[in-house]
Image (cartoon, rainbow, N blue to C red; front, top):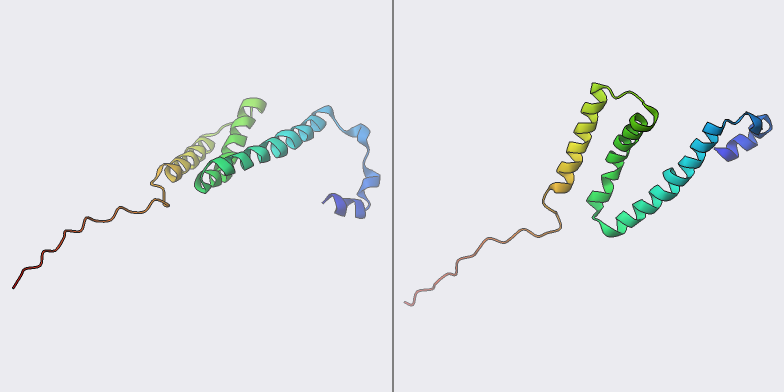
Length: 118
């Protein structure tokens, strides 16, 4: 999108003196924690956990983002938000606490057959 904006001539309309400190800190935060730290942690978990556990990050990340918004910025947590978060966390727990699928099923005991002599 940066390339499209530059090609569209929007770069000439940018005035860095209008950037607030809060917006620059927010962009720096997103670069460091939203990209570098998060991607590094994702790759580490990918090498040390099952794919099932790693895939749950797609469900847990929004809950973490909402919680951080409530804690850091004082954003409201409605009953609907709490309920949705509990449903998501419950689903993730159900997904990762079940029986692993790569473990073969135990075979039923086969009773030996005895042949009779005629």
